[in-house]
Amino acid sequence: MIRAHWEWALDDGEGRPLVVPSPVFTTQYDAEQWLGEHWRELAGGGATLARLLHDGAQATPGVVLPSV
Image (cartoon, rainbow, N blue to C red; front, side):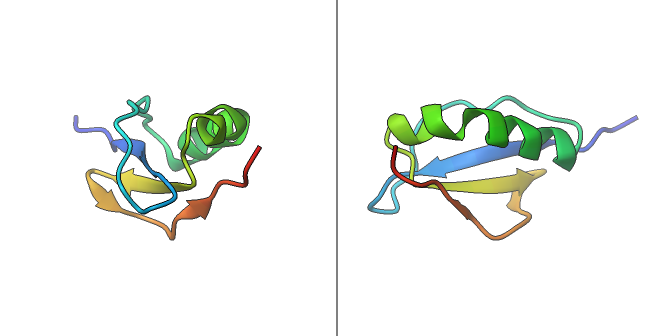
C-alpha cells in the first residue's frame, strides 16, 4: 500500500530554498499541525515561506511565516 507523502519546503526572504529537512507526514492535517507548532523556530532560522508538498508537488499556496 502506498501512503501519501506530505512535507514542507521552506524559503528564505529572497525566495531561495532553505536546506532544512522536514518530517514526512502521512496526512495533510498532521503536516499542518506540525507547522503550527514549529513556525516560530523555523522563522527564527530564516524561513519566511513554507510550501506544503504532496508527493513532491506543491499542494497549497505558501504560508508566510511572520518575523519573530
